[in-house]
Amino acid sequence: MISEGVNPFSYSWYLNSVLGIGSTLNDLEQNLWIKSTEEGYVLREKGRKLFESSQDLYTFDQFWDEYHRITKLLKSDKEATLKYWKKLKSKEKVLAYENIENYYNGCVARRDPRSGKVYIKKARTYLDDKNFNDEFKQSSESRIIAR
Figure 1 (cartoon, rainbow, N blue to C red):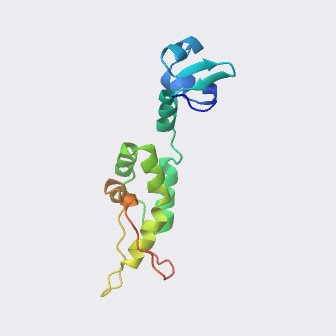
Figure 2 (cartoon, one colour; figure 1 turned 90 degrees about the horizontal axis):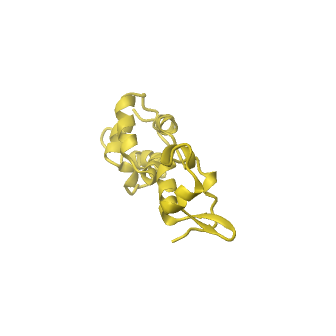
């Protein structure tokens, strides 16, 4: 139930987002966020899960810039894309960011054989359809600029 000796004060959520200013160690213990041990305080499972769910590895702006850098699409629908970004869980945000290039390369591999066109979704649709969860066929060709 208790995670390894984690200092609860090292997390930004301690005073601000979860407990509010003025919270004490006693409050934390009573709410089962931490446990007092001989070595100090350790974060319980409940506190660890809250911390993990509140920390995003990548910001929306990082995703937005990276998506358009890789796909070479024009930036459009930023507000709509942000709405979909906010709906994602932290783990999904990581996948969405880290699979942009795999998604792009998979699109290149599936180019239309007759026209040679590469179809790439806008960032909003990529998030809404959760294409970051897809399996991607990789192309042996070099990267091709999206049109």
